[in-house]
Length: 501
Image (cartoon, rainbow, N blue to C red; front, side, top):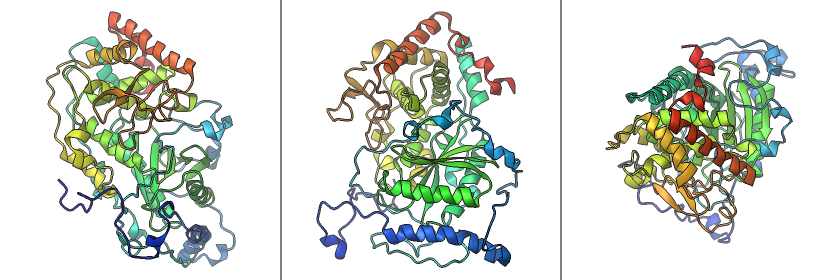
């Protein structure tokens, strides 16, 4: 379906190369960032302020520079400096989060527990001097010159994956369906929210390319997959190279350089923090847009599953309202926080998709089975955004209302799904027996990641947390099936977004 893609029919490993590296031992892991490349990034960090001063002619400020408040994009005003000490706002955060150890912070997209031998395809850049597919990437020596912004991603108007996809909303034929629809309409992310996030992404990419000129910064997660809300934070994936990056060593070092650059050079970035989780991130707040961001390095599975979920979101018009009400319900019940041992939003989305796939008359198919070439895990990253624009809507014969589907979702996981023996698989569009691998043993909930096939619900590792999740499903199902009133399990009228309408 993609005749220009160089990956069709290619095995998931790089072609043999007739060079020195071909003669290395077979068990040697793929080369990561060399020490010289990491030293270069540190040199570039020191040179960034020098380059900016030379361009502005402020030679007197070269020895000592102080960050100045500035804007980007549409020139939105930046809050006063006192705002830099305010707490994070706009999404579910614990009041004592600043005191929580780094290793228990929430993770959005999980990497495999072992370092994969799979080599990701080259990330094409507009500046071809830095990367040639199949060639040896040599270290570069960077002089203290002005950053080359021509190597950045296209501006927003040229980004096809940000185009708004029109979806006709389903008809609400009963009170519960109307409540679900009203909640969705009031809380769903708006086009302006996405543009603000992408404006920050573009600005940060230009800054990070001063440290890593060949890098690219991707917006991923709920902001782009169609299941975001107005209060959703934003996830960013920094792609440094085509090979996997060791998350415990290289990723942390790269993020420490990024965190230092943010804290010392960018006045519009508030409190950048390096979170040393299994997938380390830099957490920060953008003062211009007021959005909170989580930035990871080379966790490219998040890019692929973002566009898989985006395709599901717009394949059938009942999917997005149902997912949003499930996320709001789970948050209200306190079972939507992986950092506290419950379900991540990503796992909840996969659970909803799985339920819709397993109905007697399915509402969703397995897109990976129907369109395997469009969700090829070895496809180049700059091609994955094309799938949502090319796959037609799925015409289901199931005429269930939103209210019926929400009640059925609660019933399915309260009474029907076999948690002890089965695994949720959106890839297979059915419940499948648990694998016998170590990652799946003694786990209370098993939700398969569609691409790397890890367990997205492994955060649920305590029995009493699992019991609480089951209890909330059972309690909410019994209440809702009798009175069919969303307020009985989720007082949606109390949401601030509902009051602004």
